Image (tube, rainbow, N blue to C red; front, side, top):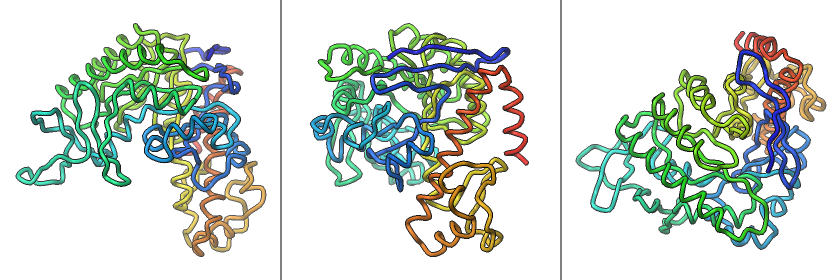
Length: 399
């Protein structure tokens, strides 16, 4: 993998570049489409490509459990397995290992210790009834139970690298510990130090593997919402010879821009930077302004399948009564397949009728919308008018 910066915006960290992989170039900034289980829900790979996607990210944890990384390897790697001929990424599996065993989205902290390590527990369980859930963290790695059948598994940094080597994505990520944004400073520090040790182990094992295909390894910056920890993580990882960097963790909305800037002012300028799990339009613009090159998020298809559609004037709930007889496209100036061929009234009808096509058409539009926001930001950087573009996007979206 190679990365080249082709233009930088004055008075910000925004830049336009090109990530070159063995399966093609990624023009940055870029929105990365998430195909968790080697599929983008409700869409074919042809539809994903037509929506403007350049790269697809799949999930190591899910593909390890089903169908198995060895099967994907034997199929010729991730891209060939899912009929995608462009660049691919896989995450380390860390987020899912922790979140699926810990109700991560409910701001659950890691709280209790026992003889074997640190257990993640649900904060909704009364103290006198707390018992270990699905995840156990030790220095060596993480023991977890499959959400599919309850079977026990053990992920280490080395095992994550081996699985991702089998999957064969162009860009892979080091194994890290994901913490709740509400975890104490002391625990964030403890977890961060462990993540750095795991990063070193990931990098060492990655270099030792006899890989069938070229793969770039990104280290992941953690540190929660604490400025000193984020900066420490950036400095430590910058000292390791990673091919690029991911910025992970869970952010409070108001923290995201600051946390990204803290990190990117330290990370090497000549390496690409990926913001994990961020996809709201405003967050994309703020991320680009603060030096992010690529983003991934499930939000365009997840919202689309549930009838929430992005427009440049904000979100649209397509099942609202006002759209029942609205025969205009979702967005008049949008060139996606859905807007060129179908009306708001028709898409609304599909949702009310519980037709599968509803989620597909909404997801096509949402994916096109987010990829275009980021692609247009790239053009604005090349033309030295990013701040004009930012103002236009935010003024419209926040109306």
